[in-house]
Amino acid sequence: MQVNICKPCGSELLLRDRYRVLSILGKGGFGATFLAQNESLPGSPQCVIKQLRPATNEPHLVQMAQRMFEREATTLGKLGDHPQIPSLLDYFKYNQQFYLVQEYISGSTLQQEIKEQGPLTEVGVKYFLSEILPLLQHIHSQGVIHRDIKPANIIRREPDRKLVLIDFGAVKDEVSLAAVANTSDQTALTNLAIGTQGFAPPEQMQLRPVYASDIYAVGVTCIYLLTGKLPKDLDYNQSTGEMLWRQYVDVSDHFAGVLKKMLEEAVKQRYQSAEEVLRALDLEAYIDTLKNGFTWGNSHKPNGKSTQKDQKIESVPSSGKTATARLAEMIAKRKEKEKNDNSAAGSPTGGIRRTANTSGPATGINWSNSQGSSVGKLKHQQLDADSVKTYYKSGRKDFAYKDLSRLDLQKVNLSGGIFKEAKLIRTNLQGSNLEQANFSKANLQMVNLQEANLSRSYFEGTDLQAADLQGADLSFANISNTNMTNANLCGANLKGAKITEQLLKQAKTNWKTIFPNGKRGSW
Image 1 (cartoon, one colour):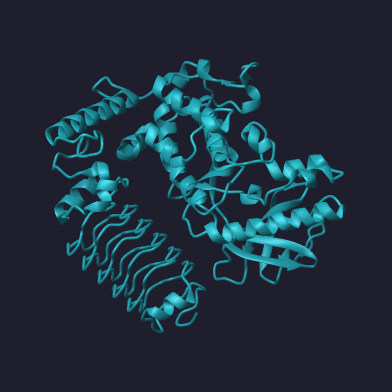
Image 2 (cartoon, rainbow, N blue to C red):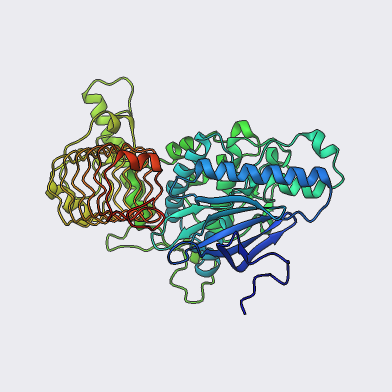
């Protein structure tokens, strides 16, 4: 006989006749989180269910918790189209209790990784920042403050190894001081509204969070990644409140200065946006280099234990230079070339042109614009098919802002490629592997993607007008906010894909098309 009631908490294990609870993931004063599976869908995919179940009967606290729970659902609904944020799958009231169903993210948290493998090097933390800061920029652009960024809330997703930010339960409405004064349980309300002690800056502790509050939390997360120590395990300057961490690691003075500004106690002295931090680090042009250096300082230790000496170790190639030294040399060379280029052109501004090609095969392609500088957005550089194949095989996957129109790239492996705002008009990609590729805001008009593998790819804002996607695998792809006018989806697999019925009506489908609900030939 199958059990449908959880004995410890009395909740039903099969909610709404579809969600079967498998295990409890965590619980607190205002609810619990469960791992479940959706038995109404083919394959019974796993999901995460949050249940609002306040431990108090105080009406004003219950009402406050409910409002914040609803705010989390609204926030996830708004942000969940991003590939590094869990999707909101369902939100409902059942038996007088509220439930929120999210996409299940399989993988390890950064806190678990550091405990198992030891602290990261400076290069590793810079790569972490290059991935988390653009995500933070997206969140802030939607008018949202996360308020609980920490290693335990960042998962490295399997199998693509991308960082995913979870637990938007700390994304809350403003709580007035009057509300605090009127409550009989200030501790519960404060914990609900603030976030995590040590990772939250002073203004957030005073219930006045701003976007820069998340910058502070990212800075504390960096310190943990470098040292393996939580905020409570570090000392602080009694006069200034400054976190004392430099003695545990060996990092460049420049990087230490950036972290110091991220961790300023005074909001006005701190970086105000993710873009400011990225510019201060000068990372945009060196994402691939950083990725290659994303190693643990003590990864050679089989037991995962680290020492101060271990944390200073970086792999040294035959050139005798560490990844950090090579990175610094590359940046210096690029800046010197920018200076020379601008002098030759009579530029009074200095530092605007980004034309140096300091790494990768020497073909003269301007890769330093691929991360989104203003110059790269103004002009799409034309590439040929051989250049695309050569660069991909050499480890470069970033083709953002490039013009790949009318190229013959049949049956080519470009999985994980970044084609943000690129032009692929009439490009032939039939049968190619483009799994987990990013086509954000790209122009794919009349592109040939027949039988292509586009599983888990990202098409936010993409122009797919008249694109041929016959028989393509688009399972679990994000196809929201696209132009699908006259796109051919006959025989395409859209199982689990994020796409609206309205967009599907713009495209051509037939009885062979597998729709997001897993059914063939029907929505």
